[in-house]
Image (cartoon, rainbow, N blue to C red; front, side):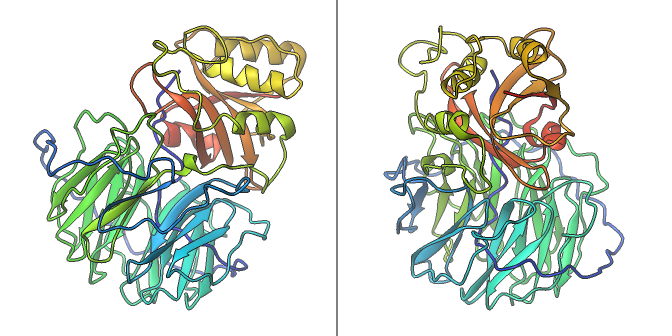
Length: 470
């Protein structure tokens, strides 16, 4: 059993693109040192907190943000939703799935998508053009897709990255953009300037998002522990770094004047700094489902939180996994152990139940396996009946990922999940039982990813010691 350290790829406001444009050569200037800040005072709640009235709708509006719709009534999205972007008027937004599929609401127009393209790596982030007549999306490998009036200025799609890309931000005139990797490495294209990075800094936690200043002469990076790194003319207004947070930070958004920013916790918490005002959070929702990030309204008087697990997902593009994945997917955003006693669940006794859930999914898919409670027993079963392989070997839908350092005991084999999707680059999406965020003993079935299994230690806070074949 484990609380997920990160939820999905970071929300960097997504939309899809057409065909991948060939990458261009680029050179990076010397890296600037990361800005160091004194320890912050303990965080205190500010403003009046209201739980969203749109729980289970996937798009949760606060302040002057308005709910315009979401794909909760479809029979099943082909891939999990990973982000959103608002229109310049604030009267609409786009949602994007990991396979590049686009959903537009309000005054957001559809300009194209990569939803019917066999992309190499899953989409993880996006940005809209300043006039809202186009958008970019970025994949885990830094490949760029552009639609509408969005121009192509370069990508890292053919570059060997040290760490995967987690998001992007456009310049104010839309003639350039930055990509950020989980180690804080910055890649600048078009008229985007390089003002520094954390690519050569030993971070306590991975970078999960970024935001640019209004004049485009600086940017902030945020880590999953709430640490803030500011570069160029971006000012430091405080951080959650060093604090004991109830859940990891999933993303950030800056205020329109650049004199403040919000951080969003994966449990729906909101942490405002500078002139950012709290308009509400989603921490009182029951059951708590993972928040993937935050998107501010253009006037800064509201924001949206994105709750991807609210959208029914079939995991059909890229496909595979059959009845095992279908069974696991049917349990997402349901069957919490709340109200029945700590760790009570529908898959077995009231105890840590990630392995109970995974073996239930295998059993439902026709695999003749006992309902194990200990994850290490699944490893032993696979060794005896099928086979296990390392995280560096490409997984298959329906397989089980085993987190930790080995199968010996509960201290070394700590969690597991079912592989729901595998992209050509090896990135995966998993469905996991007894997964956070949530109160201790009250976790849920949630979607995790996309992420590279070989980078699970950075993405999830724990590595994968084996993948068990069903």
